[in-house]
Length: 140
Image 1 (tube, rainbow, N blue to C red):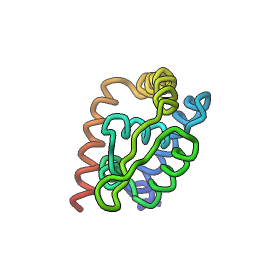
Image 2 (image 1 turned 120 degrees about the vertical axis):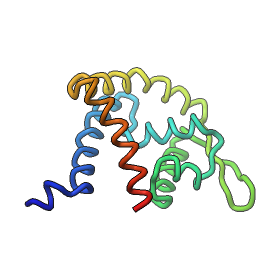
Image 3 (image 1 turned 90 degrees about the vertical axis):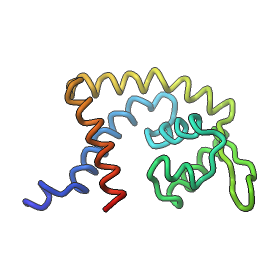
Image 4 (image 1 turned 135 degrees about the vertical axis):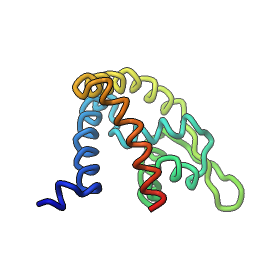
């Protein structure tokens, strides 16, 4: 019991699932899960972007990310084109840009609800703590 109470992995995953559910529920009208929405956002901010760079940006496993990208490409939300060598470059389609634009107000709603419930000062501290946690995990 003590290990579960103190386990970083257990507690981060529990928090991640709870927060993801809030965003998933709020983003439902645009037909995207929170993981898909943040993937679109990461592509938009870095397009065109290669899988390896997107994987680093999102701290996501390449094989999982590839499966998610294939679904988004199949649905016409993103497109890929050949880059150098075997690299594929990903960017949003017009449909993807519309969905992202439609999703921003929904994201703002979820974000606002979360920060309000948590408390703005607590969120500011937590956000910097999360950055530190990512750096620590990468160095461990």
